[in-house]
Image (tube, rainbow, N blue to C red):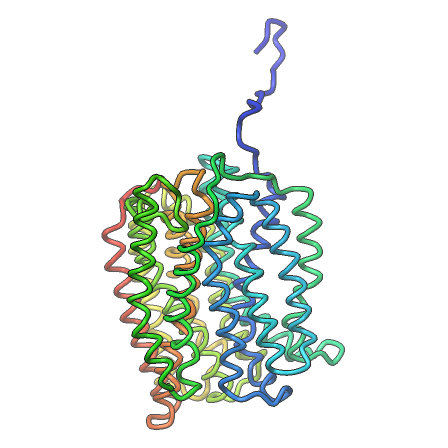
Length: 476
């Protein structure tokens, strides 16, 4: 209040960090949704792609795995580049590249061309996604940051379910005769809108003390993830050849070399690609440990249910996608309550979410056992709705916990580590639970294979709930 009695607006210091407006938050969340939607959107389109491009099962696996592996391998590097050159700049460049590679996927004349375009699309996603969380970390604070993190978690979870629903709708709609190609071409107008909005509303942020790229660390991390993910995602379709076993045997050796190089750089006072000192943060370490089983179960369920509903229950792509609509709706609504529940009950919300999800998965398994093959949205509604509520009380909160103590200067690195862990676990989930399900089908039938896979997922949910008891009670 001035001497004349008029109110004066608060003046921001010139050195204060830029603020992320509501429109800016919407824009970066749009950028976060696109890569996650595209990981799942092809699940219901794969049968159509195989028929149209005369692709074998092994090549179709590469359409999924090529995207997921390149995405996971380059995420931490994308976060470091954002810290170094500016997160807004990397976000714009990554989004533009995502639009171009989506166009290449939609116009692919052959299966191998599609695989190559998907690998490039994964690389573009890796440049774009880490900038989202890093921008939120650097350009928000306090209650605004908590709300933005909650919305990011809601967007991430909703995107993974909505991708499968949208894929079914687009394939069935056959817009202008595009068929499966629409699941990629739909990205192009969305990207154009995102670029316009980002140029206007996303502030530029970067690390105040950027470090050069850690080349040895980057190469060793890429090799570590490749030696693990490539044989897991492609091994079954390829018939488990010798290279898959050699690759898995090489993984612990390369991972140990990566840790040794990063620890040496960290102790020397330099900033490695993944600083081991970052894992001294209890919230980050324990949150990441929980994200692994959660994401494995989530992606494995989404892949298996898409195959079972289409090939076993004879549902079309639209019906198979819409069967998951209750999960998406309940997830989104429940996740909006997350910040309020966390403020009141702390991280015990995650434990409650795990128990609720366990009830939902058990209900789905019971429904499959009793009603197979007469499954649809109404039969699955109780289980999918309850599971969606449980997932919504876990994923958004876990993302917030992981990054709660990461300094703003290392926002890109922390975001890249979190996203890499999540994306790698998503790829492992499709490979492990998907392989289990498909290997059980010939000898036990589709119903028993699906029930068994759901029970394995239920064990993973129980593990997640148990691990949540070790989380710090309060979230910063």
